[in-house]
Image (cartoon, rainbow, N blue to C red):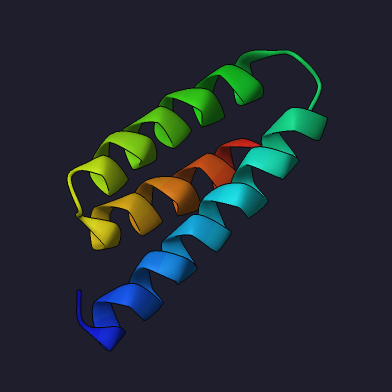
Length: 66
């Protein structure tokens, strides 16, 4: 894995951890449920090594929690 890919991987992992922490603190309800769907989509994108899509899903998960 190149250094650039490793850096992007680290950023994705940090972004996922940040969104997961916010999700864990959020009260139950439709916003949390919507955020979970985006977070799970981000996990699938990350597993498929599509960090751009993962970041987009994580952004949507964050917005859903607002």
